[in-house]
Length: 361
Image (cartoon, rainbow, N blue to C red):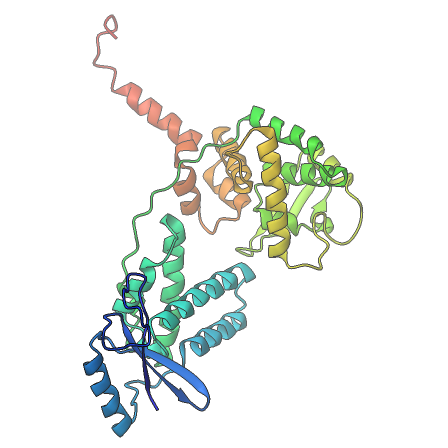
């Protein structure tokens, strides 16, 4: 049996929500197969037209135009395949987040099967994203990967996500921490309300500043990663091996921490993401107490990179220290901080002055 119902909009003025005929809100149909409930939009707001369609379907049965699994099942199969390909947990988390949003969108719009998703649906889905710039591009790449997987499985006619054009990316200007700001932040650690947390947070900030590691890699930093004042680490995001010498002050701060467990900042029992979230809250309080409200954990990574580039370190070496997959990423993010490029640009501009009169110049 197929049931008709309306999804009433906030602007609906009909008092009796059970009345189907005197309303112009979207109409959906609902039916059950083997105990599972399915919903789909009727793509009309005309009650009589919708009623005629379902009467015809009840006579001939609901026919699917393509054989495909439900959207949730397809997402679960993709995650299983991604795990078999040994994708990193941060990447799997991004896919899971995308799939939750996709399933919520499908539920609201009455979409059941992967074959129900088309280019128009995906454009509407993308319009619901809060992501902008590079984050939106990354999310679009994840969606394309899912639809490429579905297309090869024969669930959809084509990879509709390929027809979604990426938005324009406006890179945010990177303003690294000034030495005075960093000193204020370190001093603010001594004002933390919990005394036992002060050396931990201080050591964490020093490691982030002088290693350029992402906060997740710092939180999960193992004690055996530090050998003779050198840090050896395989980053969680890219799986790249990182080798970086550390200043003696950083090593000393780490040695002051309680020698408990395999990690400096994590007990190993909770999920890494939960531990990162807790540290982010603590660091936010320190930034506020130091009067450096613009600071955030990833800014220490930017400060590490820009400091090296300003001192003439090559882009190739900085890319290796940051565990970037290529120098293109480093150049795109930090192009205006590359000393060799700035020096060359300055020399080229000065050459154009040769035609000027020395007196007037």
